[in-house]
Each structure stands twice: as C-alpha cells, then as structure tokens.
Length: 107
Image (cartoon, rainbow, N blue to C red; front, side):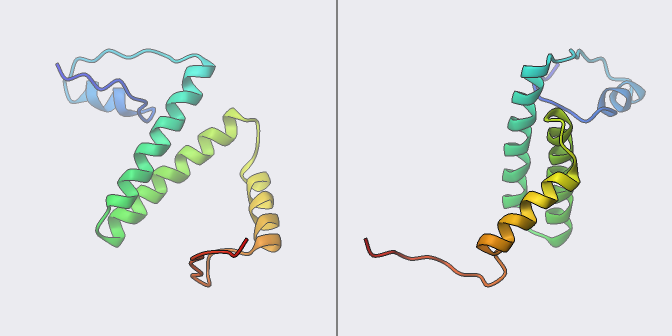
C-alpha cells in the first residue's frame, strides 16, 4: 500500500472508498493543519510552475485559490479582507502589470 502522508481534499477518502480502495486517514489538530496547508500550498505552486498548458495552469491556480480560502478560514479572515489588503498594496506599490524587472539599485 503506497504511503502519501499529505493533506488531501475532503472528498478524496470517499472517492477512494467508492473505488474499492482501503485507506487510513487521521484528522489533524489546528497547528498541524496549518503546517500541512502551507506544505500543500508549496506543492501546488510547484505544480503551477511546472504546468505546460493554459488548462493545467488554470487547474493549479484553482488549487492554489482553494488553499488560500482554507488558510483564510484558519486565520479567521475573509476573502474580502484579503482583497482589501491586496488592493491597498497595489495602490501603494503597484501591481505587476508593467512587467518591470529590477536589475540593480545604487547604494
């Protein structure tokens, strides 16, 4: 039996059981849940970076967004709060639309 030791979406155990698979799961405590969400976010960012088609990129971005929503719930924040922070930073520092790549800055 392969060992995964990773956070999975809520319906994955049900899907595996319906496919006739035996599995073992555990429910994480709060601190471990945050740690595993962060690990999963890194995993999904890596998968986004490796994606080679627009469809794959959008699938991975959707996974990243799902993790952002989960992390917001863990931190007792809303997506609207996050959007306000993003908009404030964009107003102060700009976004990334102009494709500016900083080479160096004189001391």
